[in-house]
Image (cartoon, rainbow, N blue to C red):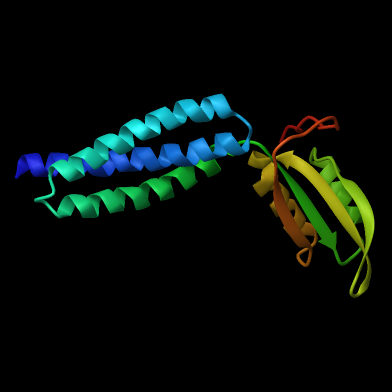
Length: 174
């Protein structure tokens, strides 16, 4: 009985590791870091094969199948947490302000964000569209600033794979 618990726990943890690495591997591919993605993929495959071999070797214990699937789910969840924690890369945030956005632009710039403003015409007339390119780790701070100034703003966030040129102001001390 004790060996079955150890094998089941191993299957679960190996699958959590495998799926967490899968998330990181995909992120590295999306960021153009193919070599690092390949190295992560090697580790991912090792965990996957080892976990699967234990399930197949111990088919007499159906709990192992459940733990294998639970490890997949938990690893997917864990990978998402890790991805949010490390917040690699940049995002482009488009803010469509239904009101005068001059105060919002000022607040964003005072907080170290670069802002580009263009005018756009929507269903209800002219609106200012603000573009902010920033590090993903700063996204939550930006969203709080926007919400504090313009609760009705329409906000769209897009991942940015590559940046060439431009100006990134240094982050101001808090």
